[in-house]
Length: 115
Image (cartoon, rainbow, N blue to C red; front, side, top):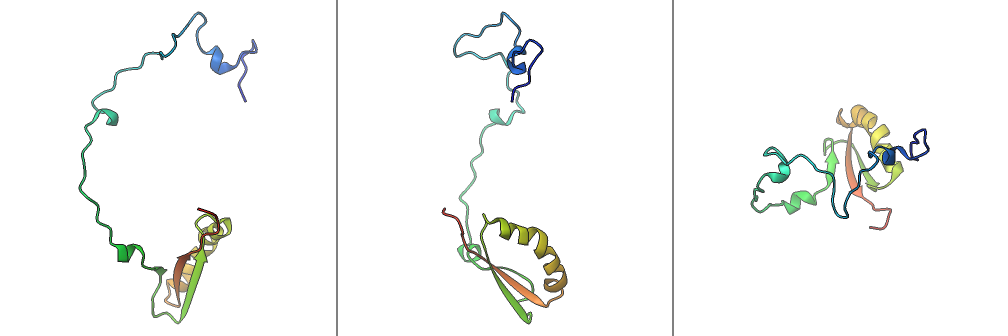
Protein backbone atom coordinates (compact mmCIF):
# COMPACT_ATOMS: atom_id res chain seq x y z
CA UNK A 1 0.00 0.00 0.00
CA UNK A 2 1.40 3.38 -1.00
CA UNK A 3 1.04 6.45 1.15
CA UNK A 4 -0.64 9.18 -0.87
CA UNK A 5 0.16 12.85 -0.85
CA UNK A 6 -2.67 15.29 -1.31
CA UNK A 7 -2.08 15.43 -5.09
CA UNK A 8 -2.63 11.64 -5.39
CA UNK A 9 1.00 10.80 -6.26
CA UNK A 10 2.57 8.01 -4.16
CA UNK A 11 4.66 9.55 -1.35
CA UNK A 12 7.82 7.66 -2.25
CA UNK A 13 7.66 9.05 -5.80
CA UNK A 14 6.60 12.50 -4.69
CA UNK A 15 9.64 12.81 -2.41
CA UNK A 16 11.96 13.25 -5.44
CA UNK A 17 12.16 16.96 -6.26
CA UNK A 18 10.44 17.85 -9.52
CA UNK A 19 12.82 18.44 -12.40
CA UNK A 20 15.28 15.87 -11.03
CA UNK A 21 16.37 13.34 -13.59
CA UNK A 22 18.75 10.44 -13.42
CA UNK A 23 20.64 9.12 -16.39
CA UNK A 24 20.17 5.42 -16.97
CA UNK A 25 22.56 3.47 -14.75
CA UNK A 26 23.32 6.29 -12.32
CA UNK A 27 22.32 6.67 -8.72
CA UNK A 28 22.34 9.67 -6.42
CA UNK A 29 25.74 10.37 -4.86
CA UNK A 30 26.62 8.72 -1.57
CA UNK A 31 29.21 9.66 0.98
CA UNK A 32 32.49 7.83 0.32
CA UNK A 33 33.20 4.70 2.37
CA UNK A 34 35.24 5.35 5.47
CA UNK A 35 38.08 3.30 6.87
CA UNK A 36 35.72 2.01 9.57
CA UNK A 37 33.32 0.62 6.97
CA UNK A 38 33.66 -3.21 7.17
CA UNK A 39 33.34 -3.46 3.39
CA UNK A 40 36.59 -1.52 2.96
CA UNK A 41 38.59 -3.58 5.47
CA UNK A 42 40.93 -6.30 4.17
CA UNK A 43 39.58 -9.82 4.58
CA UNK A 44 41.58 -11.91 7.00
CA UNK A 45 41.70 -15.59 6.03
CA UNK A 46 41.19 -18.07 8.84
CA UNK A 47 42.68 -21.51 9.05
CA UNK A 48 40.87 -24.79 8.44
CA UNK A 49 38.00 -25.67 10.74
CA UNK A 50 38.14 -28.93 12.66
CA UNK A 51 34.81 -30.60 13.40
CA UNK A 52 34.45 -33.30 16.03
CA UNK A 53 32.22 -35.67 14.03
CA UNK A 54 31.51 -37.94 16.99
CA UNK A 55 30.36 -35.00 19.10
CA UNK A 56 28.40 -33.45 16.22
CA UNK A 57 26.38 -36.62 15.69
CA UNK A 58 26.10 -37.65 19.33
CA UNK A 59 22.62 -37.62 20.88
CA UNK A 60 21.27 -34.30 22.13
CA UNK A 61 20.38 -34.87 25.76
CA UNK A 62 19.53 -33.05 28.95
CA UNK A 63 19.43 -34.37 32.48
CA UNK A 64 21.08 -37.12 34.45
CA UNK A 65 21.68 -40.22 32.31
CA UNK A 66 21.02 -42.33 35.43
CA UNK A 67 17.55 -40.80 36.02
CA UNK A 68 14.81 -43.38 36.61
CA UNK A 69 12.69 -42.07 33.71
CA UNK A 70 14.06 -41.68 30.18
CA UNK A 71 12.16 -39.79 27.47
CA UNK A 72 13.09 -39.91 23.80
CA UNK A 73 11.49 -37.03 21.92
CA UNK A 74 11.21 -37.17 18.14
CA UNK A 75 10.71 -33.66 16.77
CA UNK A 76 10.99 -31.71 13.55
CA UNK A 77 12.75 -28.36 13.36
CA UNK A 78 9.97 -27.11 11.05
CA UNK A 79 6.97 -28.35 13.07
CA UNK A 80 4.81 -25.75 14.78
CA UNK A 81 3.57 -28.26 17.37
CA UNK A 82 7.15 -29.23 18.21
CA UNK A 83 8.02 -25.53 18.57
CA UNK A 84 5.06 -25.10 20.95
CA UNK A 85 6.36 -27.98 23.07
CA UNK A 86 9.87 -26.51 23.25
CA UNK A 87 8.69 -22.96 23.97
CA UNK A 88 5.77 -23.61 26.33
CA UNK A 89 5.97 -27.13 27.79
CA UNK A 90 9.65 -28.07 27.99
CA UNK A 91 10.72 -25.25 30.36
CA UNK A 92 8.26 -26.41 33.06
CA UNK A 93 9.05 -30.09 32.42
CA UNK A 94 12.76 -29.36 32.68
CA UNK A 95 12.40 -27.34 35.87
CA UNK A 96 10.16 -29.84 37.65
CA UNK A 97 11.61 -33.16 36.50
CA UNK A 98 14.91 -32.86 34.60
CA UNK A 99 16.63 -30.38 36.92
CA UNK A 100 15.62 -32.49 39.93
CA UNK A 101 17.19 -35.64 38.46
CA UNK A 102 13.92 -37.52 37.90
CA UNK A 103 13.93 -37.46 34.07
CA UNK A 104 16.52 -37.75 31.30
CA UNK A 105 15.51 -36.51 27.82
CA UNK A 106 17.09 -37.38 24.48
CA UNK A 107 16.10 -35.34 21.43
CA UNK A 108 16.03 -36.94 17.98
CA UNK A 109 15.33 -35.24 14.66
CA UNK A 110 12.27 -36.50 12.79
CA UNK A 111 11.87 -34.37 9.65
CA UNK A 112 8.20 -33.92 8.78
CA UNK A 113 8.74 -31.79 5.68
CA UNK A 114 10.61 -32.42 2.46
CA UNK A 115 14.15 -31.00 2.54
